[in-house]
Image (tube, rainbow, N blue to C red):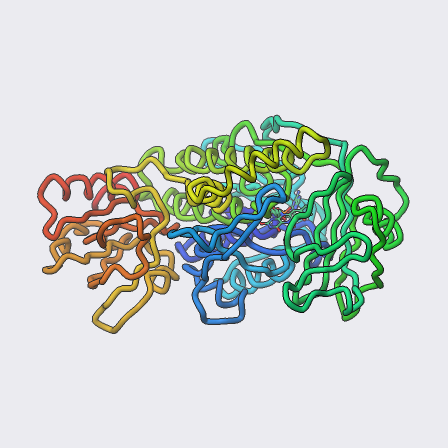
Length: 519
Ligand SMILES: Cc1cc2nc3c(=O)[nH]c(=O)nc-3n(C[C@H](O)[C@H](O)[C@H](O)COP(=O)(O)OP(=O)(O)OC[C@H]3O[C@@H](n4cnc5c(N)ncnc54)[C@H](O)[C@@H]3O)c2cc1C
């Protein structure tokens, strides 16, 4: 074996997996066909529970530039309909407005700090596998070569060579009836409403910032990011043309969508500036996420509309789910079937994103029937429970993995509990940065001390107290014990001050199914 894991693709998801494997003591080799960082910027931000997940690795601080923990967003938008999230008790919607290029930079820096080898200018062109490993064929700067590894992960994007080379189908739908044009621009200061930060378009009226705005003729977005003002106009059943995209083309499109002229000029500042036309879109889900020793990650496994920005919430959490399981296989402690739970746990998350992005696409489409549907939907959203349902779905907070035990936290992301430890007060998210599994014993007399015998090499024990600060209000009281997987999902939890023999048995079963037999 030349290496344990080869990752094809140094996009955000491949880099995140590389970091996770390194934290778990596995040194992957990342192959990236591009020589340098891509000039393209796709995502303008991260949306959902992934923001909390990055906090648990210390990456939120690097991306936000502040030591402040993530706070839920007071509002968001579903299918160009505003969501009033400030009134929810347990608001699950977090957001971080950072361009994808910056996210990739931060992840690459972190991967390099952790000792990951990233080979730029190396393209995966072929692969074969046998019982013991995978042989990758690579076109590198010095010519073609082969690399043998125990596992290969295709994080090589929506057109994944890995997926195609493995013959994995990618069923779904391709739509070709929409054209979306976006660019960085400057707008005259007098058009900006100082109270709302929105735009007052002469002859049309006010448009709130950072919201999809549907009209009878399309959709418009005005997004004054700190890195530059971005606008987007989307139309249906409109010829996209094949000449290079221009600001004049965007101007025409905005005029058709709003029925009014938006005076704007070219962007200022060093850039890079966006000037993009995208036609149509794909919604597809790989038939399998794993064939033998080859696995698919991120866009290689699923593509969907970018509406609502769910892509990296899904893909980066795929990487967090896969990293520790693959490391367990490589270190030899993974129980049988653990690696297959990557697909059983993450496919439903992907299916949910496929569903809600398609639902949103239906809600923003033109037509009187859609307008009527939106009126009805708006009425339903007045009920806070409906808003909560949508927010849970968009943020990924409604994902519950099927794990041992019946505690309401089991199978869900850990709450960011504040813990009183021997060394002082600490947020749970600050204890999980090394990605080690944790058994958090909050019982009054540290009743769980002996349970980890035979697994101390794999699971750390934290003894602490908590007042319950950081818990969802829906939970009646603070737990007295939590078993956390490295992806910070709760594998087992208890409310007993002194867990009885039956509960300890459940804990031992949970330990065995996540982290293998004691040895
Ligand atoms: C217009 C647009 C806006 C978006 N906005 C958002 C948003 O606001 N929020 C959000 O969360 N998501 C957004 N997304 C989705 C997000 O950009 C993707 O989900 C994300 O880029 C997927 O990351 P990835 O690492 O899986 O794949 P990619 O980012 O596609 O990276 C794959 C990498 O693999 C490399 N590669 C490909 N083939 C090979 C090969 N054979 N060998 C070696 N390397 C290879 C590529 O060069 C690339 O670097 C948006 C997407 C688009 C298109």
